[in-house]
Length: 212
Image (tube, rainbow, N blue to C red):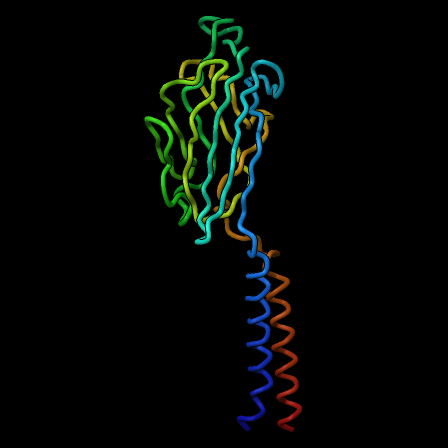
């Protein structure tokens, strides 16, 4: 009777091997992406002299470690908004943060680097205190960290620690790449698992027919 179980085992190993080959094929090219996102001011504006931009890149190495890098650009026309202590005076940027679960396994495996002070804020993400501050018309140095997790898009904020802190992507700005630390959607694995289940069921039916 042992011989009748071989077709089922062959189907099982064949299905698993097919999934492994598909995964390897999908990861044959290392990720190397760059772009620019426009953050919004306190009024949700993403254009004009108040619009802070973030140049970013995500680069994957052969060990599947992703390096995330951000550069904050403070436009020359950036001034304090009405209602601030000194409206119309130049507005600096002295901190920057990205939102993701930095406490999740593999989220931030190294860093962050690139500023005088930096802080891991757990489920809130990563937060840099930037010094020297970013004056209008200048940019920060690269702010980087590494993660085992591939990118998705999430919120970012560039602020001045002195009120009114007028920039945040939450108020209508564009998102930046951050590690994808959430649990995979059930539908993302439903197809392959269903295929394996069908193959195993077919093997079981064949086994039963041979046994009889």
